[in-house]
Amino acid sequence: MLIFQCHGDRCLSSNLQEHFTDLKKLVNGKSLLMGEKNVQKRLIRLGQILRVFLDKDRVSSIWLSRNFQITPRTIQRDLAALKKSGFPIHEIQKGVYRLGKDLIKNLEVFDETELALVITLRNVVGQLGRPFQKAADGLFNSLYDAASSMPVYVRMDESIPLDSSLLNRIVKSIRLKKIAGFYYKSGKPHQVNMEPYRVVHFGGFWYLVGKDTGDSVIKRYALDRISDFKMGRTSFRKIPENLDSAIQGSANIWFSTDQNLVVKISVDASSSGYFKRRKVFPTQEITEEREDGSLIVTFRVGRYEAIQDILKSWLPHITILEPAEFRDAFLADMKKWVQRQEKTMMQGDLDAKSSEAK
Image 1 (cartoon, rainbow, N blue to C red):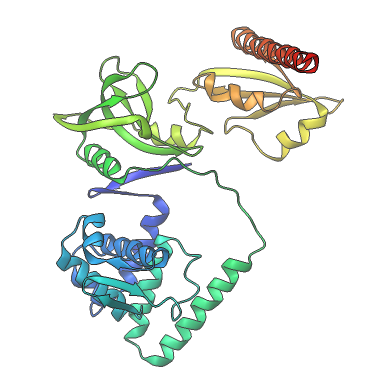
Image 2: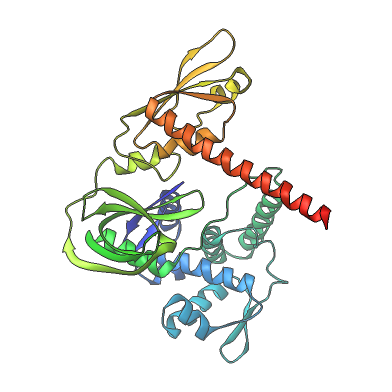
Protein backbone atom coordinates (compact mmCIF):
# COMPACT_ATOMS: atom_id res chain seq x y z
CA MET A 1 0.00 0.00 0.00
CA LEU A 2 1.30 3.46 -0.92
CA ILE A 3 0.19 6.82 0.42
CA PHE A 4 1.08 9.85 -1.71
CA GLN A 5 1.50 13.22 -0.04
CA CYS A 6 1.76 16.58 -1.75
CA HIS A 7 4.74 18.88 -2.14
CA GLY A 8 4.51 21.72 -4.60
CA ASP A 9 2.33 20.55 -7.45
CA ARG A 10 3.51 16.94 -7.37
CA CYS A 11 3.05 13.88 -5.16
CA LEU A 12 5.92 11.76 -3.84
CA SER A 13 5.98 8.71 -1.63
CA SER A 14 7.76 9.09 1.71
CA ASN A 15 10.67 6.91 0.51
CA LEU A 16 11.27 9.11 -2.56
CA GLN A 17 11.29 12.21 -0.39
CA GLU A 18 14.13 10.71 1.67
CA HIS A 19 16.10 9.82 -1.47
CA PHE A 20 15.91 13.33 -2.91
CA THR A 21 16.72 14.99 0.41
CA ASP A 22 19.97 13.02 0.37
CA LEU A 23 20.53 13.95 -3.30
CA LYS A 24 20.31 17.66 -2.56
CA LYS A 25 23.04 17.24 0.05
CA LEU A 26 25.18 15.22 -2.37
CA VAL A 27 25.09 17.53 -5.41
CA ASN A 28 27.41 20.50 -4.79
CA GLY A 29 27.06 24.03 -6.10
CA LYS A 30 29.22 23.37 -9.20
CA SER A 31 27.04 20.59 -10.49
CA LEU A 32 25.13 21.21 -13.72
CA LEU A 33 22.00 19.88 -11.98
CA MET A 34 21.94 22.85 -9.61
CA GLY A 35 21.14 25.24 -12.46
CA GLU A 36 17.41 25.08 -11.71
CA LYS A 37 15.53 25.93 -8.56
CA ASN A 38 13.70 22.63 -8.39
CA VAL A 39 16.48 20.03 -8.40
CA GLN A 40 14.11 17.30 -7.30
CA LYS A 41 11.70 17.87 -10.18
CA ARG A 42 14.48 17.92 -12.76
CA LEU A 43 16.14 14.76 -11.43
CA ILE A 44 12.85 12.89 -11.75
CA ARG A 45 12.42 14.14 -15.31
CA LEU A 46 15.98 13.20 -16.29
CA GLY A 47 15.40 9.69 -14.97
CA GLN A 48 12.17 9.46 -16.96
CA ILE A 49 13.89 10.71 -20.14
CA LEU A 50 16.67 8.18 -19.74
CA ARG A 51 14.07 5.44 -19.30
CA VAL A 52 12.46 6.54 -22.60
CA PHE A 53 15.82 6.18 -24.37
CA LEU A 54 16.34 2.74 -22.83
CA ASP A 55 12.91 1.60 -24.04
CA LYS A 56 12.94 3.16 -27.52
CA ASP A 57 15.34 2.91 -30.46
CA ARG A 58 15.05 6.60 -31.38
CA VAL A 59 13.36 9.60 -29.78
CA SER A 60 12.52 13.03 -31.16
CA SER A 61 12.97 16.20 -29.13
CA ILE A 62 9.49 17.33 -30.23
CA TRP A 63 7.96 14.14 -28.75
CA LEU A 64 9.89 14.63 -25.51
CA SER A 65 8.75 18.24 -25.27
CA ARG A 66 5.09 17.28 -25.74
CA ASN A 67 5.27 14.22 -23.50
CA PHE A 68 6.87 16.05 -20.56
CA GLN A 69 4.98 19.29 -21.23
CA ILE A 70 8.12 21.46 -21.25
CA THR A 71 9.69 23.75 -23.83
CA PRO A 72 12.05 22.47 -26.58
CA ARG A 73 14.79 24.60 -25.03
CA THR A 74 14.39 22.84 -21.67
CA ILE A 75 14.56 19.45 -23.44
CA GLN A 76 17.83 20.50 -25.09
CA ARG A 77 19.24 21.41 -21.67
CA ASP A 78 18.12 18.04 -20.29
CA LEU A 79 19.76 16.17 -23.19
CA ALA A 80 22.94 18.18 -22.63
CA ALA A 81 22.85 17.26 -18.93
CA LEU A 82 22.58 13.57 -19.77
CA LYS A 83 25.47 13.84 -22.24
CA LYS A 84 27.68 15.61 -19.68
CA SER A 85 26.81 12.88 -17.19
CA GLY A 86 28.36 10.33 -19.55
CA PHE A 87 25.34 8.99 -21.42
CA PRO A 88 26.11 8.61 -25.19
CA ILE A 89 23.07 10.33 -26.67
CA HIS A 90 23.64 11.19 -30.35
CA GLU A 91 21.59 13.19 -32.84
CA ILE A 92 21.12 10.77 -35.74
CA GLN A 93 19.09 13.29 -37.75
CA LYS A 94 17.80 16.76 -37.05
CA GLY A 95 15.78 16.64 -33.84
CA VAL A 96 15.99 12.83 -33.52
CA TYR A 97 18.26 11.18 -30.95
CA ARG A 98 19.48 7.70 -30.04
CA LEU A 99 21.21 6.32 -26.95
CA GLY A 100 24.31 4.22 -27.63
CA LYS A 101 23.08 1.20 -25.71
CA ASP A 102 26.14 -0.84 -26.67
CA LEU A 103 28.20 1.60 -24.59
CA ILE A 104 25.68 1.94 -21.76
CA LYS A 105 24.81 -1.44 -20.29
CA ASN A 106 23.20 -2.81 -17.17
CA LEU A 107 20.70 0.02 -16.64
CA GLU A 108 17.53 -1.79 -17.66
CA VAL A 109 17.02 -3.27 -14.18
CA PHE A 110 16.72 0.18 -12.56
CA ASP A 111 13.48 2.13 -12.23
CA GLU A 112 13.11 5.87 -12.92
CA THR A 113 14.00 6.92 -9.38
CA GLU A 114 17.13 4.76 -9.37
CA LEU A 115 18.07 6.14 -12.79
CA ALA A 116 17.83 9.66 -11.34
CA LEU A 117 20.30 8.59 -8.66
CA VAL A 118 22.59 7.09 -11.31
CA ILE A 119 22.52 10.35 -13.31
CA THR A 120 23.44 12.37 -10.23
CA LEU A 121 26.29 10.06 -9.23
CA ARG A 122 27.69 10.00 -12.75
CA ASN A 123 27.54 13.79 -12.87
CA VAL A 124 29.38 14.15 -9.55
CA VAL A 125 32.13 11.60 -10.29
CA GLY A 126 32.56 13.14 -13.75
CA GLN A 127 33.87 16.27 -12.03
CA LEU A 128 36.39 14.23 -10.05
CA GLY A 129 38.30 12.73 -12.99
CA ARG A 130 38.66 9.48 -14.91
CA PRO A 131 39.77 7.25 -11.97
CA PHE A 132 36.50 8.00 -10.19
CA GLN A 133 34.51 7.50 -13.39
CA LYS A 134 36.08 4.07 -13.82
CA ALA A 135 35.34 3.19 -10.21
CA ALA A 136 31.74 4.36 -10.62
CA ASP A 137 31.28 2.20 -13.73
CA GLY A 138 32.52 -0.77 -11.73
CA LEU A 139 30.06 0.07 -8.96
CA PHE A 140 27.12 0.25 -11.38
CA ASN A 141 28.11 -3.09 -12.90
CA SER A 142 28.25 -4.63 -9.43
CA LEU A 143 24.82 -3.25 -8.63
CA TYR A 144 23.50 -4.74 -11.87
CA ASP A 145 25.00 -8.13 -11.09
CA ALA A 146 23.45 -8.06 -7.61
CA ALA A 147 20.03 -6.98 -8.92
CA SER A 148 19.91 -9.43 -11.81
CA SER A 149 21.20 -12.44 -9.87
CA MET A 150 19.37 -11.87 -6.58
CA PRO A 151 17.64 -15.19 -5.72
CA VAL A 152 14.59 -13.40 -4.32
CA TYR A 153 11.34 -12.89 -6.20
CA VAL A 154 8.57 -10.62 -4.98
CA ARG A 155 5.28 -10.83 -6.87
CA MET A 156 3.62 -7.43 -7.23
CA ASP A 157 0.15 -7.26 -8.72
CA GLU A 158 -0.09 -5.23 -11.91
CA SER A 159 -1.64 -1.84 -11.25
CA ILE A 160 -4.36 -0.05 -13.16
CA PRO A 161 -2.60 2.56 -15.37
CA LEU A 162 -2.35 5.94 -13.65
CA ASP A 163 -3.34 9.09 -15.55
CA SER A 164 -0.55 11.51 -14.57
CA SER A 165 -2.49 14.55 -15.77
CA LEU A 166 -5.46 13.63 -13.57
CA LEU A 167 -3.14 12.89 -10.65
CA ASN A 168 -1.47 16.30 -10.92
CA ARG A 169 -4.85 18.07 -10.93
CA ILE A 170 -5.95 16.10 -7.86
CA VAL A 171 -2.65 16.83 -6.12
CA LYS A 172 -3.03 20.55 -6.73
CA SER A 173 -6.54 20.48 -5.30
CA ILE A 174 -5.32 18.61 -2.20
CA ARG A 175 -2.35 20.92 -1.72
CA LEU A 176 -4.47 24.07 -2.01
CA LYS A 177 -7.30 22.53 0.07
CA LYS A 178 -9.88 23.26 -2.62
CA ILE A 179 -13.22 21.45 -2.98
CA ALA A 180 -13.32 19.60 -6.31
CA GLY A 181 -15.98 18.11 -8.55
CA PHE A 182 -15.85 15.22 -10.99
CA TYR A 183 -17.98 12.72 -12.88
CA TYR A 184 -17.84 9.18 -11.48
CA LYS A 185 -18.53 6.25 -13.80
CA SER A 186 -19.49 3.42 -11.45
CA GLY A 187 -22.89 1.78 -11.08
CA LYS A 188 -25.14 4.66 -12.01
CA PRO A 189 -22.77 7.42 -13.26
CA HIS A 190 -23.12 10.56 -11.17
CA GLN A 191 -21.55 13.88 -10.24
CA VAL A 192 -19.44 14.05 -7.06
CA ASN A 193 -18.35 17.09 -5.06
CA MET A 194 -15.82 16.44 -2.33
CA GLU A 195 -13.00 17.65 -0.14
CA PRO A 196 -10.02 15.68 -1.59
CA TYR A 197 -7.63 14.40 1.09
CA ARG A 198 -5.33 11.64 -0.19
CA VAL A 199 -4.45 9.49 -3.20
CA VAL A 200 -3.83 5.89 -2.11
CA HIS A 201 -2.93 2.58 -3.75
CA PHE A 202 -4.48 -0.72 -2.65
CA GLY A 203 -4.42 -4.08 -4.42
CA GLY A 204 -3.40 -2.72 -7.81
CA PHE A 205 -5.95 0.14 -7.84
CA TRP A 206 -5.53 3.90 -7.29
CA TYR A 207 -8.13 5.73 -5.21
CA LEU A 208 -9.00 9.28 -4.26
CA VAL A 209 -10.05 9.57 -0.62
CA GLY A 210 -12.06 12.53 0.62
CA LYS A 211 -15.25 13.77 2.23
CA ASP A 212 -18.42 13.96 0.14
CA THR A 213 -19.85 17.44 0.60
CA GLY A 214 -23.39 16.10 0.21
CA ASP A 215 -23.51 13.76 3.22
CA SER A 216 -20.16 14.59 4.94
CA VAL A 217 -19.05 10.94 4.70
CA ILE A 218 -15.43 10.04 3.90
CA LYS A 219 -15.48 7.97 0.71
CA ARG A 220 -13.06 6.46 -1.78
CA TYR A 221 -13.25 6.71 -5.58
CA ALA A 222 -11.24 4.68 -8.11
CA LEU A 223 -9.13 7.05 -10.23
CA ASP A 224 -9.70 5.08 -13.44
CA ARG A 225 -13.44 5.82 -13.14
CA ILE A 226 -13.05 9.55 -12.55
CA SER A 227 -13.47 11.99 -15.43
CA ASP A 228 -13.84 15.74 -15.89
CA PHE A 229 -12.05 16.52 -12.60
CA LYS A 230 -12.23 20.24 -11.81
CA MET A 231 -10.85 22.15 -8.85
CA GLY A 232 -13.29 24.67 -7.43
CA ARG A 233 -12.71 28.01 -5.74
CA THR A 234 -14.15 27.09 -2.34
CA SER A 235 -11.59 26.04 0.27
CA PHE A 236 -11.97 23.48 3.04
CA ARG A 237 -10.38 23.83 6.47
CA LYS A 238 -8.19 20.77 7.03
CA ILE A 239 -7.55 17.09 6.43
CA PRO A 240 -8.63 14.84 9.34
CA GLU A 241 -5.66 14.23 11.65
CA ASN A 242 -6.36 10.50 12.07
CA LEU A 243 -6.87 9.77 8.36
CA ASP A 244 -3.28 8.72 7.58
CA SER A 245 -3.10 6.36 10.56
CA ALA A 246 -6.44 4.81 9.51
CA ILE A 247 -5.16 4.21 5.97
CA GLN A 248 -1.85 2.80 7.15
CA GLY A 249 -3.64 0.48 9.59
CA SER A 250 -5.85 -1.08 6.92
CA ALA A 251 -5.28 -4.10 4.69
CA ASN A 252 -7.49 -2.77 1.89
CA ILE A 253 -9.45 0.25 0.70
CA TRP A 254 -12.30 -0.42 3.17
CA PHE A 255 -10.63 1.54 5.95
CA SER A 256 -12.37 3.70 8.52
CA THR A 257 -11.24 6.29 11.05
CA ASP A 258 -13.54 4.62 13.61
CA GLN A 259 -12.89 0.89 14.14
CA ASN A 260 -15.72 0.20 16.55
CA LEU A 261 -16.93 -3.14 15.13
CA VAL A 262 -15.48 -6.41 16.47
CA VAL A 263 -15.55 -9.68 14.51
CA LYS A 264 -14.76 -12.90 16.38
CA ILE A 265 -13.83 -16.16 14.67
CA SER A 266 -12.46 -19.59 15.53
CA VAL A 267 -9.55 -20.97 13.52
CA ASP A 268 -8.97 -24.71 12.98
CA ALA A 269 -5.77 -26.20 14.38
CA SER A 270 -4.67 -27.01 10.81
CA SER A 271 -4.43 -23.29 9.99
CA SER A 272 -3.72 -21.75 13.39
CA GLY A 273 0.02 -21.60 12.69
CA TYR A 274 -0.48 -19.04 9.92
CA PHE A 275 -2.39 -16.72 12.25
CA LYS A 276 0.36 -17.04 14.86
CA ARG A 277 3.14 -16.28 12.40
CA ARG A 278 1.58 -13.13 10.93
CA LYS A 279 -1.53 -11.01 11.20
CA VAL A 280 -3.96 -11.56 8.34
CA PHE A 281 -5.45 -8.15 9.18
CA PRO A 282 -3.71 -5.25 10.99
CA THR A 283 -6.06 -5.28 14.04
CA GLN A 284 -5.96 -9.07 14.53
CA GLU A 285 -5.70 -10.26 18.13
CA ILE A 286 -5.46 -13.87 19.32
CA THR A 287 -7.62 -13.94 22.44
CA GLU A 288 -7.47 -17.70 23.18
CA GLU A 289 -5.33 -20.70 22.29
CA ARG A 290 -7.22 -23.93 22.90
CA GLU A 291 -5.85 -27.32 23.88
CA ASP A 292 -6.79 -28.86 20.52
CA GLY A 293 -4.61 -26.27 18.73
CA SER A 294 -7.48 -24.09 17.49
CA LEU A 295 -7.63 -20.34 18.12
CA ILE A 296 -10.15 -17.64 18.97
CA VAL A 297 -9.28 -14.50 17.01
CA THR A 298 -10.83 -11.03 16.93
CA PHE A 299 -10.59 -8.17 14.43
CA ARG A 300 -11.56 -4.53 14.94
CA VAL A 301 -12.99 -2.93 11.80
CA GLY A 302 -14.90 0.17 10.80
CA ARG A 303 -16.88 -1.68 8.10
CA TYR A 304 -17.54 -5.38 7.69
CA GLU A 305 -16.46 -5.12 4.04
CA ALA A 306 -12.90 -4.60 5.30
CA ILE A 307 -12.65 -8.18 6.61
CA GLN A 308 -15.22 -10.29 4.76
CA ASP A 309 -13.16 -11.11 1.63
CA ILE A 310 -10.12 -11.89 3.76
CA LEU A 311 -12.16 -14.36 5.81
CA LYS A 312 -13.57 -15.95 2.64
CA SER A 313 -10.03 -16.82 1.59
CA TRP A 314 -9.65 -18.88 4.79
CA LEU A 315 -12.74 -21.06 4.26
CA PRO A 316 -13.32 -23.82 5.31
CA HIS A 317 -10.75 -23.44 8.09
CA ILE A 318 -12.57 -20.73 10.06
CA THR A 319 -15.95 -20.28 11.72
CA ILE A 320 -17.52 -16.88 12.35
CA LEU A 321 -18.74 -16.60 15.94
CA GLU A 322 -19.75 -12.95 16.34
CA PRO A 323 -21.51 -10.68 15.62
CA ALA A 324 -24.65 -12.50 14.53
CA GLU A 325 -25.58 -9.92 11.86
CA PHE A 326 -22.23 -10.29 10.12
CA ARG A 327 -22.27 -14.08 10.47
CA ASP A 328 -25.76 -14.35 8.98
CA ALA A 329 -24.99 -12.01 6.08
CA PHE A 330 -21.77 -13.91 5.40
CA LEU A 331 -23.63 -17.24 5.41
CA ALA A 332 -26.38 -15.91 3.10
CA ASP A 333 -23.71 -14.74 0.68
CA MET A 334 -22.09 -18.19 0.69
CA LYS A 335 -25.44 -19.90 0.13
CA LYS A 336 -26.03 -17.74 -2.95
CA TRP A 337 -22.62 -18.76 -4.27
CA VAL A 338 -23.38 -22.46 -3.67
CA GLN A 339 -26.68 -22.10 -5.52
CA ARG A 340 -24.99 -20.45 -8.49
CA GLN A 341 -22.30 -23.12 -8.52
CA GLU A 342 -24.83 -25.97 -8.39
CA LYS A 343 -26.88 -24.36 -11.16
CA THR A 344 -23.77 -24.08 -13.34
CA MET A 345 -22.88 -27.71 -12.68
CA MET A 346 -26.40 -28.89 -13.51
CA GLN A 347 -26.40 -26.89 -16.75
CA GLY A 348 -23.03 -28.38 -17.62
CA ASP A 349 -24.34 -31.93 -17.08
CA LEU A 350 -27.40 -31.19 -19.27
CA ASP A 351 -25.21 -29.76 -22.04
CA ALA A 352 -22.98 -32.84 -21.88
CA LYS A 353 -25.94 -35.24 -22.15
CA SER A 354 -27.40 -33.24 -25.03
CA SER A 355 -24.09 -33.42 -26.84
CA GLU A 356 -23.88 -37.21 -26.30
CA ALA A 357 -27.43 -37.69 -27.65
CA LYS A 358 -26.49 -35.96 -30.88
